[in-house]
Amino acid sequence: MGITEETRQQLLAAQKTEITEHHIYRRLAQRLPSGDRNRQILEKIAADELKHYQVWKEYTGQDVKPNPISIWWYTLVARLLGFTFGVKLMEMGEENAQVNYTAIAKAVPEAKALYDEEEMHEIELLDMLDEEHLRYAGSVVLGLNDALVELTGALAGLTLAFQNVDLIALSGLITGIAAALSMGASEYLSTRSEETDKNPVRASIYTGIAYIITVALLILPYLVLQNYYLCLAISLTTAVLIVAAFNYYISVAKGEPFRERFFEMAGLSLGVAAFSFGIGFLVRLWLGVEV
Image 1 (cartoon, one colour):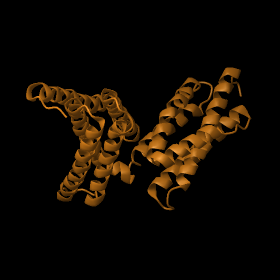
Image 2 (cartoon, rainbow, N blue to C red):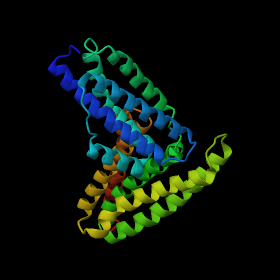
Image 3 (cartoon, rainbow, N blue to C red):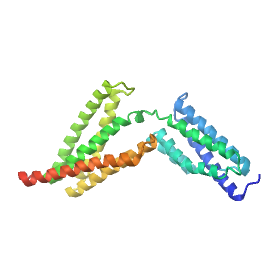
Image 4 (cartoon, helix red, strand yellow):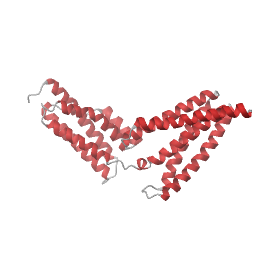
C-alpha cells in the first residue's frame, strides 16, 4: 500500500499496543457489575482498540500477539489499587502510541482519526472517577496528613526527651491510637454536617484506618531497633515515602499535580519534626528532665 518498511514496523508496534490494551480493557470491564456505567465505557474503549488493531492489520497484513506481561501487570495493578488507577496508569503509556499516529499520518490517512479517538478516550476516562475509595480520598488525606504531622513531631520530641526506644514506642502508640480515634470522630461529625454524598461512618473509617496504618509504620522502627536516633531517621524516611506513594497514586488516579502536593505534605511533616526535636532538646537542657 505504498508504505516504507520503517512505517510498517511502526504500525506493527502500534498494532501490538492496540491488541494488548484491548485485552486489558476487556478484563477490567469483566470485573465490574453488568450494566455498570464504568463497565460500559471500558467495553466501548476495548472495542475501539480492537478496531484500531484491525485498521493497522490492513496495512501490515500480519496478526500480532498481545503482550502477556502488560496484560498481567495492569490487571494486577487494577485489582490491588482500583480500576481507575490501573486505567489511568495505562493511559499515560498510550501517549507514546499517539505520537506514532502523528508521525505516520502522511502514509496512513486513518492515523489522524485514530489519534482523535484516543483523545476522546482520555475524556471518557476522566468521567470514570467514581470508585468509593477515590470519593473518600479527602478523608484518607486527612488521616495521613494529620498522622504524619502529629506523630513525626511527637516522635522527634520524644526521641530527644526520653532517649529510650521502649518509652518512645509506648508513648507514640498511645498518642497515635488516641489521635486516630479522635480524628475518626471529628471526620464523622464534619461529614455529617456537610451536604455531600459521602457516608459519615465510612468517611470516619477511612480517616481512622489511614491514621492507624501511618502510626504503625512510623512506630515500627522503635519496636525492632535499639538506636533511637536511627529509629527516628527511619521513621522520617518512612514518612517521606508514604507521602510520595500516596501523592503519586492521587496524581495518576485524579490527575492532580504530584510535585506541589508532595513538597507541601513532606515539608509540613519534616518541619514539625524539626521543631519538636528542638523542643525535646530544650526540655532536657533547661528543665533537666532525665528518664
